[in-house]
Length: 317
Image (cartoon, rainbow, N blue to C red; front, top):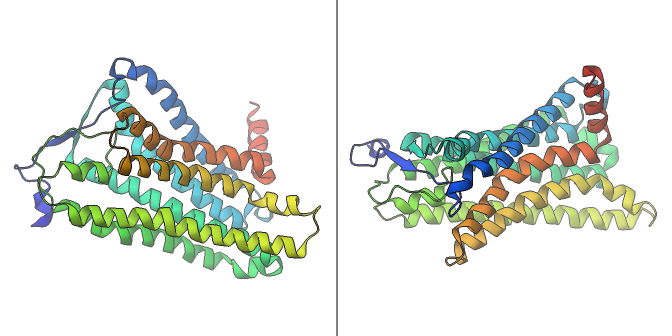
C-alpha cells in the first residue's frame, strides 16, 4: 500500500527541476563547462580503471590500487547519476521528471555518496597499514579481505538507503512541484510533501551526520596514528617522503567532505542565502570529486601516470 502512494493519481505526475536561479537566460552557456566536467569525470575515471585493469599484475594489482578502483567506480557512478537531468535542464530546458525517475535518481546519488565516504575510510585504513605495519601490508590486506570490504561498502549503502526509500514512498505530494536543483535530492524532495516529514528529515539528518562526522572522524584518527608513527620511527629527512604517499588520499578527502559540509551548513543555517549559492555548493559537492580525483591520482601516483602515458604512446596521441 505504501509503495502505491507514490504513484497514485492523487500525487503530482511529475516534479519540475530548475537550472541556475537568476541565470535561466544563459543556462545553455553554463552547460558548456558542466558538460566539460562530465566528460573529464567519465574519461578520467574510466582511464584509471582501464590502467589498473590492464597493467601488469606486479605493478598495479596491489591493495592500494584495488581501493583506487573502487573510488574511480564510485565517482563514475556519481557523475552518471546526475548527468541525464542536468544536461536535459540546461541544454534542452526539459524540466519535468516523474516521481519514479526522481526516486531512482535520488537513490543512486545518495547511494554513491555513501559509498564514496566508505571507500575513503577504507583507503585511510590502507594508508595506516602501509605506513604503520608495512611488513604485514599484503598479508593483512589480502585480495579476499579487500573483496569483503567492497561487499561491505555496497551493503552499507544499501542498508542505510532502504529505510529512506520506504519512508519516501509513504509520502503524498500535493504542494508545489518545483525542486531546487537539476536533480533529485532527498532533502529537497521531501519538503514538497503534504504530510508530516519529521521522521524522514530526522533519518536523513542522521545519515548526513553519519558520513559528515563519523567517517571523517575515523579518517582523522587514522592520520593521527600515522603521523605519530612516522615521527617516532623515521628521521626528519624521511618524513616528507613517507607522508607523500598519503597526499592523494588527503586531497580526495578534502574535495569530498569540504563541499559537502559547506552545503549542509548553508542549507541548515543559510535561509537568507541567495539560491545560486545553494546551487553552487551542491554542484561542487557532486561534480568536483569525480573530476579531480582521477587528475590528482594521475599526477601523484607514478604507476598510474606511467600507465596513462603508455596508453597515449600506443595510440600515438
